Image 1 (spheres, helix red, strand yellow):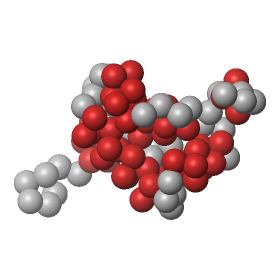
Image 2 (spheres, rainbow, N blue to C red):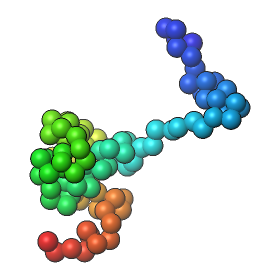
Image 3 (cartoon, rainbow, N blue to C red):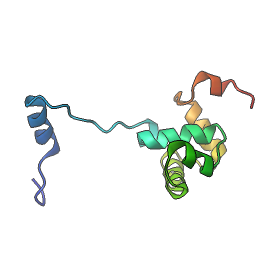
Length: 101
């Protein structure tokens, strides 16, 4: 216990023993969050930040923040390199990878 906080593993063990489901934060490749993967998929499909924000019902500023995090986590420096990253671990559906849009 540090600064008044309970140990996460111990706390989750008590919840499981009591019959509660314990949510685990899922991470994608390169430590991307689920929401960052959502943004990356739409980014790779060629949507603008404004279009991504409308599709995910989040603000354009939040989309830009997600894109910055995606670039930092994946080492991408542009939409093209981020899109190439998305293709490698299979983050894009087959129809996106073979599309000639």
